[in-house]
Image 1 (tube, helix red, strand yellow):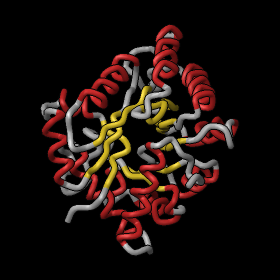
Image 2: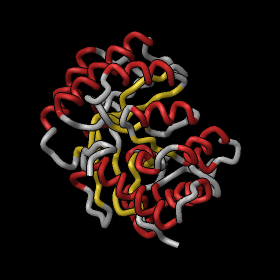
Image 3: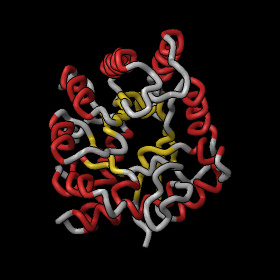
Length: 270
């Protein structure tokens, strides 16, 4: 069965680097019911690529993009590169294909950047998001508390999504109360992801998005294989199993949430 879906976080460029062309990824995804994909930028070079993919790819799927500065980048992100990423965001802020700023955030697992540099850059891009009125796409790994504390500093100002959510219900609710969408990836469909299941079950449906984060984190029945947006349906179906609302209502509301996010609207906006 096909559903009406939006993949709010995908890396088509990395999928291509791993052996599947962008055209094949898009054809498979469209056949499965995906109507839109947000192609994510992670540094200056990949943000330029993200824009190129979104604006120059011919597809039945509508493509958007983000411009970001990933906290777990393999190389240290200099102030010069941060400024170039900032300039790119400001130069493209009127482009409605540009969904938001990200990935940005905190990553205490890899720690390729020092924690203090991560926090400094995180705050910089949150302030830029307020200036441009664009949502942020937040990467947070092993940094739930610090992520929350920084976001709380910008309460009612910055907004966006906690992508690939992997914390518990308490943090899902805390982030939601700050006005953030909570986006669930293929991890939601993992059998042992009990805390994430509970989070998806217990937060308000109006806050929920879904994503693949492809080519990473492929859900069952394709776990361990290269991921793409055609697998988004398995994440949605897992969400069906966790929620008390009728499946068609969950599908409709998650789609509407995703569209709002792409159109740079806050959770509470109509």
